[in-house]
Amino acid sequence: QVQLVESGGGLVQAGGSLRLSCAASESIFSINAMRWYRQAPGKQRELVAVITSAGSTNYADSVKGRFTISRDNAKNTVYLQMNSLKPEDTAVYHCNVVARNWRYDYWGQGTQVTVSS
Image (cartoon, rainbow, N blue to C red):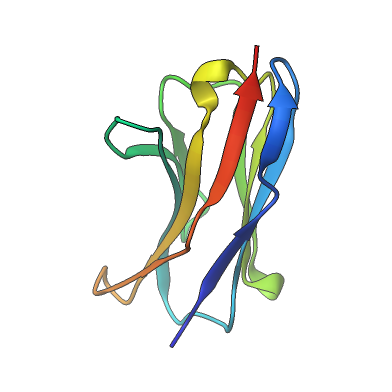
């Protein structure tokens, strides 16, 4: 059973930066996409960023220009670099990997990001 483990969350002041990591416990065959979601208290889960197997990236409008998703295939890891953080970025961030023609769907437990004003 593949496990995803996020790290890098924490408390940061507005304008600061954090880098989230999501490491898979083993190599995942035929990845279609790797994604970061977030969920703030009382709000719906939001797709923040995605990187496809071809390396294409896409971002929520709210984070464009501030967040960057990347991956290291050799380390089975996906990253989310978050700059110019705002209090509204406060949420639990989860990574998600879909594979094998979107039939396999893996989730991490989440990491808390708190941005103080």
